[in-house]
Image (cartoon, rainbow, N blue to C red; front, side, top):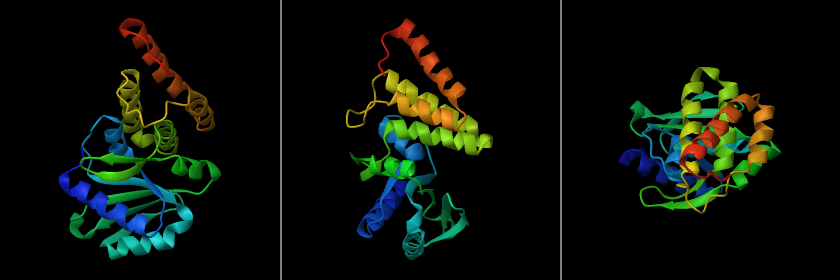
Length: 201
C-alpha cells in the first residue's frame, strides 16, 4: 500500500502532468491497489508518451527529481536523498501503446485523489510484456497477475473498469511468447471455479 508521503507525491505529480497536458496513467502496485488489492510499494509507476520526454524531464526537474536511468522505453527518477521517493515512467510509442493510454479510466480514490488508471486487460498485457522483457523479475510480475485474477474471479473489481478482453490478452500473450503462462493462470482460475462457483470472463 502506498505510504501517506507517496500519496502526496502522486497528487503533486498528477497535478503537474495534467496542468502541462502530459497524458499519463497509473500502472504497477498502485494500479493493483485501485483494482482492490492494496500492496506496499515504495515507488510510483506511470506510463506516458515517449515523444513528450523533453517536457516530462523539465517538469520532473522542477519538482526536485533527477533522471538516473533512461532508455527509449522507460525513465527512472529519484529525488534528492530519496526524500520524495522514486518515480518510474514507461514510454508508449506505438499505436497499441497509445491505445492503452487512451483507454485508461479516471478513478477517484479517497487517499490518492483523481488519477487515471490503466484498464485491467492492459494491466495484464503490460505485466506479460515486463516478464518477456525482464525474466529476472518475473516472480513478482507473475504474482501480480495471479493476484489480479483472484480479484476478478471473486468479482472484487470495481464496476467502472471494463471486463477482461480475453481475445486481446491472448493476442498479446502470443506476441510476447507468454501464451503458456496465461493459459496456466486462467486454467487454474477455471479449475478453482469448478470447486468454488462460477467464474465469468
